[in-house]
Amino acid sequence: MNATPLGMTEGDPLPMDVARLDPAALVGEVVMRAEITPFLRAAAARGCALQVGTDMLFEQIPAYLDFFGFPTTTPEHLRHLAQGRAD
Image (tube, rainbow, N blue to C red; front, side, top):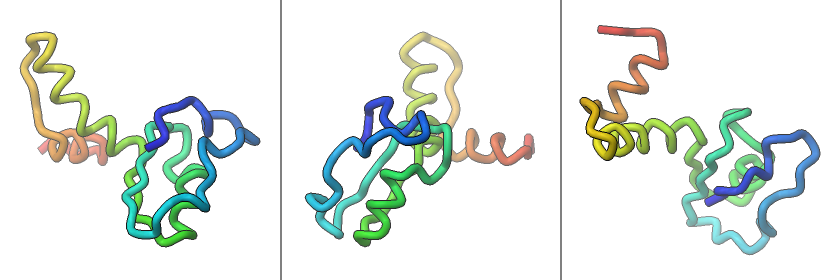
């Protein structure tokens, strides 16, 4: 999991040595500036499964809403809304 700001600026170094990643690993990213960051691209080249930054956000928003006492929703509904569909 990359939970650092590395990857938000062009030319940033990778947050870790991807050679250490097991190809069976799930590699996640919180950077949302690009869907596939250099870190995710390098992890995919090793055969890793990926989770992009927006997926992390969609999974976290319901917990944030609940924590602050607001009506909540599901990650699936958020993905649906993000695709421009309100139905």
